[in-house]
Length: 106
Length: 325
Ligand SMILES: [Fe+2]
Ligand SMILES: [Fe+2]
Picture 1 (cartoon, helix red, strand yellow):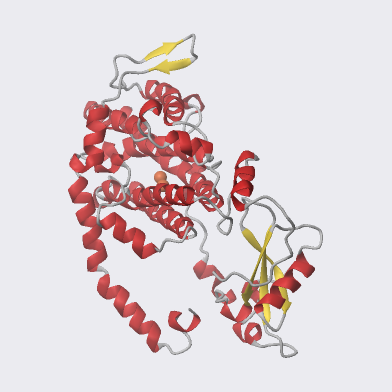
Picture 2: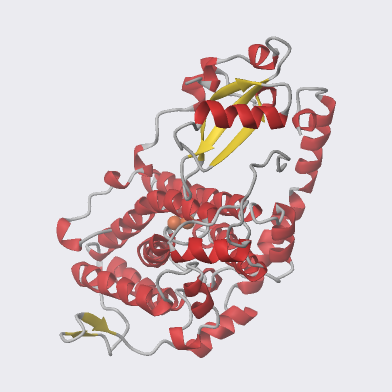
């Protein structure tokens, strides 16, 4: 699967074989989010949707498909990972607090 | 979002309304592009908006104590909690927007008093113990409600609830930890904890909504799977889990009618003062005017920042928001 963060904007914007690139998101079933599945090349949105269906949902992997022009996706800088996704502050997690067992679920 | 003109050939199937009913009956989620009855859409918008507004306004009572938190540890925790509530508001506005209403409209409806937020945030936070009581009781009651709502029928709302519930757990625990510290502290600290409990107990029960027989929305909302548990069911659960916690703290819940009912297997509790509740809902609680005025002022004071950001984006020529929109 493609990792958006590992691709630079210059390659996402460049059409291959004259066809622009589209990112594909599939909703596996009702109640779940659309999740990035991969990408397809296609000349227009309708064809991209058709290709996405054919490529990524041949075994009923989804109930809904989105395609988004890859060039429209703005990704975070992979080199900035540490600054952006700093280690989580421990007090944001429930385990930081010691609550005696007899208090019950909290 | 655009709807593709590419559609698969449809054979004679159920009508959209029949399909909607089938999905609800099967316990399936309704997703944004599905057909839905206009009243379902309106109910969903009203409920999610009210929930979102509550998260946002809910920052104020606790925010009041950030500068006066008793230690750096407590301060960092409180900042993180209030920040979470802002985030919860944003998750919910985002879910609400999938129903075809804009963020600006929602903001406007709140500012004009045409959409409500939870009555609980119209009470003042008089002492540090209130921060403990809010985390323990108000977040506790909110969690009871939100856990039930993870099974609501509208997909984006249910998903926002799952995310929110995961984050809520620390909110209640930090509140209980504050109460525990005060309850084990000096006599003055114990009194402070008891006083906060006295003031927050009844509003926390009332915030779960009017009793089932008076609730105008309950029946239709249950039919549509918007609500999966009634107000009274959630309230009972909350009471049952909270009574032993108060006992553990050695604090007294301000309800002489509180008694274990062996037959029901639940705690009986006294009559909630619903007249007082409705007074607050109608705008006459201790802090209604202050809360809304503060929210409107923050929005108006921020106008120049929003304008500057748009002007900056426009100048970026191909790099800013304006270019990708
Ligand atoms: Fe929240
Ligand atoms: Fe919370």
